[in-house]
Amino acid sequence: MYFKPLIVLSFILLFTSCKKTQEDTTTENEVEQNKTQEITEQDVSRLKYVEYILDPKTEETIKDWAEYEQLNAIIDNVKKGDLSYFNDNEKVIQLLIKELKQNIPAALNSESILSRLLVLETKLLKLESLSNLTTTSKEELLENIKEFLVAFSNLSFQMNKKIEFDNRSIEKP
Image (cartoon, rainbow, N blue to C red; front, side, top):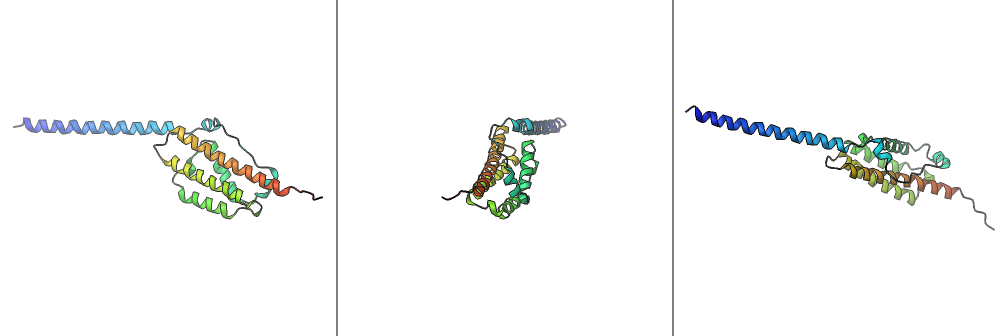
């Protein structure tokens, strides 16, 4: 009579201890995955892409464009491997993109610049969504960081071209 309850209790203890071991293993795997997903400054510096910097004339044109400066700060953080800006910050990112397009200086307000801003917006949102996913591999995240940096570099290049073209003076014969 005492033997049956002991067997039932031993089975219950056996099953609950197995479940705890499985939960511990899952937690350890998640921690390992997060460590392998961490991006460092060295990882970002190894990315191969052409980076265009702004011409002094372009810098003079955008000196009052605060949203561009904010975007530039985000780029600097991404180059350092710091993706914390993208953690559950979707509304702030949407607001930045909206204001970036609305407050563009008149000298740069052209279709070519707006199209580069659209590409940058796409890459920014893609990087934001992938950086918040736990299933994203480090290689995939680095590839998206590269695409984002290339989009920003192309925007800088296009702004330089626009200012250079507008400052050309062609004498007519």
